[in-house]
Length: 188
Image (cartoon, rainbow, N blue to C red; front, side, top):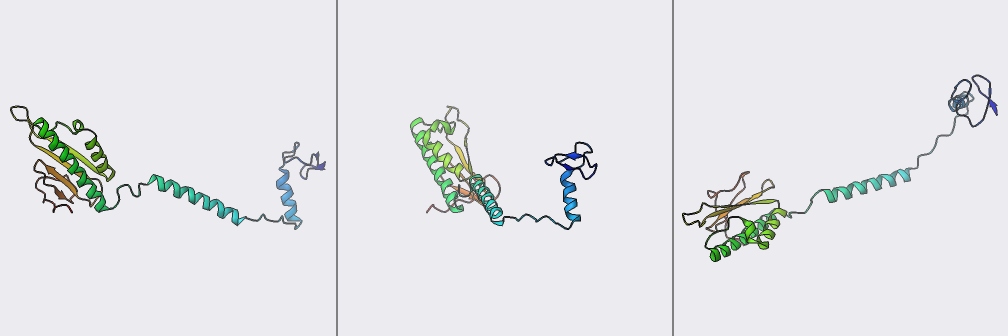
């Protein structure tokens, strides 16, 4: 037991606040030490522990960024464009096969099956959007014309256009490719 410096009542030594006057005993004890010239020793900062925690936090942030940002999904520009052209060629081949067997082009790409679905997924992995548009049907109900475009989602990449003529045309402008765009050189 000791007496409170404020009200001089006897209180328990473990008390942080005097039950009689409400004085903060810890603050009063620190003040008494400063007045007596006995400054408490400052605690040391453990720099190794701080560095380790910062390193762990940086590693966690790097791991999150690595998985959250699609770094190499589409590869380089030439790889992405080549993948889009390959997808167009595969879809055109499926359309031609369908046209030879049915006498008309398909009303949608879904009727062509897994080969076309895989080709479309390959183009999408390269950030290309495919659009198939069948032409108007003739009086007998046959469709003989179509357009197929691969629009680039990345700025500066070429967008491609093709139709029943099988000529692939390209543009680097930020618009959908059309039949007026210049044809590509033969593929390597």
